[in-house]
Length: 327
Image (cartoon, rainbow, N blue to C red):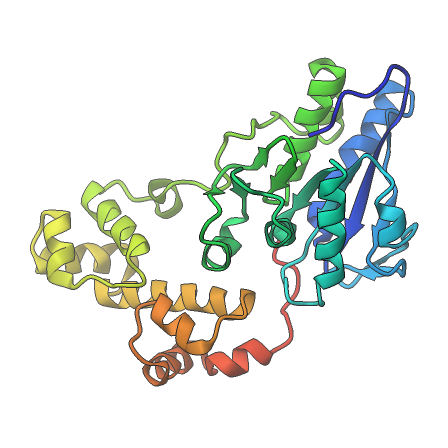
């Protein structure tokens, strides 16, 4: 959220690039402001870029960006936007958290792109506001901050700042802000420069519902899949799932075989394993905690199932280097 600028003044929007930041998310958020200057033929926005230590910072795609300064200089602009990457444990965030709390006390408006909402939450700057979290990191975020209400929408805005799921959602968020400050016509002209057909509102979802995701029309099957996703910690038996679907166990097995070429039990198991992998890679939860959160009664059984499916143990997976930028 950008406060109304003074007449004729330039709005300074600083970007703080965290180690391994998502180049995609950063570019989609910063470029609309640059293009707004071009289209308006005056400097509406100034966008200095900073890093934690003032040194050039590497994105998750391997490219390095030159920056203007460190945390001390980054506190000068009226608005600060944190740009996170896919690995929230890539550095020790304590100095960042302390710095964020100081800015919060000063009334600065702080934004977060992609996984940077994690640091706002850790600094206590989200409070009772909804937090927009990229779908891939939603499970890990909910496990780490169960008291914070998360959102499936593209971005969320509060009096203290804003959170955005990253990727192209950053473009829509900035276009909305440009429209609020300088009018819809300018925002539309900026969108045209990106060949962006429609400016999405924040209330639009970041991913499709089950029916669109899986191209499924059978409401019984959709209902069972939703129940499975909602009950990963305490998995339900096939008999109970059959009752929910309003079908026999054999009918349920035929539905899953036709749609996914696997049994409902296998589908359910894979859902739990994929969720566990997100928690392994994105949180510091102990292996037994991950196992329990995904419906396994022991770490030994969980590790055995994990190794059979992914080809490595949960512990060795956690030690592997990150695989690169996800969006």
